[in-house]
Length: 99
Image 1 (cartoon, rainbow, N blue to C red):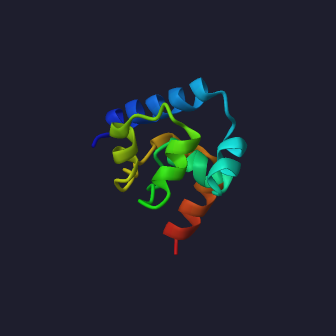
Image 2 (cartoon, rainbow, N blue to C red):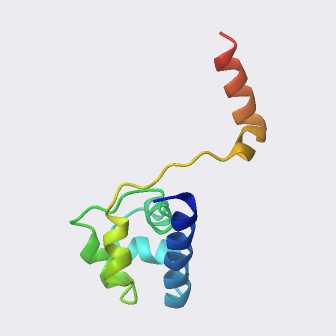
């Protein structure tokens, strides 16, 4: 999966959340997960566990089976060159690489 398809999947997942009218907190409460983990799942930054899938499906009934299965795959980590410009990351990167 390339970063473009990750973006497409993330956009589709966000559309499902938007259509539900629920916040990350509401989905978290319904599933017994943390709001951070729910956000990571719906942005394809975390992998959905098999035992968690039915809870997420119950909270988001509009979630297509195809996206549910995609969420169970390990997420694609990508590098964003703009990230290095963030001051904290910049300092850490150059401090770490100057040793």
